[in-house]
Length: 225
Image (cartoon, rainbow, N blue to C red; front, side, top):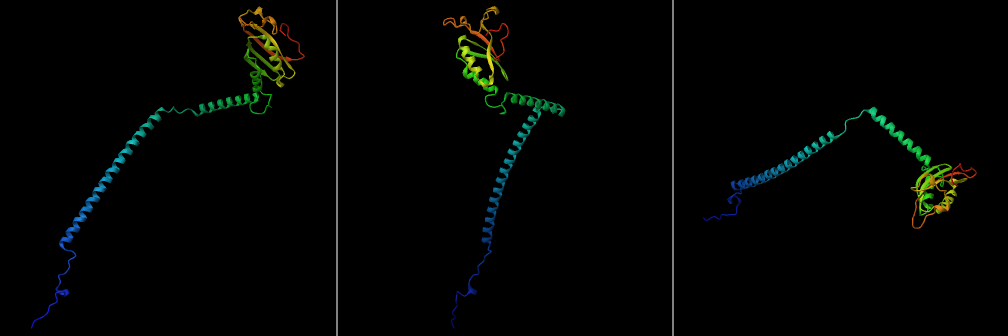
């Protein structure tokens, strides 16, 4: 009697082999390629790290050499006692300069108009064009000015303007001597002698020195007035 066979019956189908030789071979090949890639990456990374290490070592050696050179150029250590003495000298110099500033009124303690700088500013503003100053000596109540001029006639108004300053209150400026540059001592000329006026063609140079004195005081013997 004929029989019917179902070819799709699972028992008659060929079983699936998940770990066949081909599959294992393919997996082994993939793992080998992945291992080679990882080994190549690790090798390159190691080479890069080694190069960076060598560069850092070279930089360190260079900096160490520079440090040695700098240390060799340092001055020898000094004695603390000598340093202390130098410090004391500097402090003494600073104290002296500080006292000088106080005496000059630059620390702000002296009122405006009573400072040495005010005298210099007054002379600079009022000095005639044909005169110049070579020396200024100032103490409270006393002013001494030396310089030169091309025209002695400009000295009287200038000295009057300077004497009117509050710094010289109660004082007047008198001439100690006016000499023509290049003249002998016997050729000294009084301050306001018209014979000493500047000639337009010759332009002689006259040197003068004036000093403040009390208004009521009489001039010393032999001093030009």
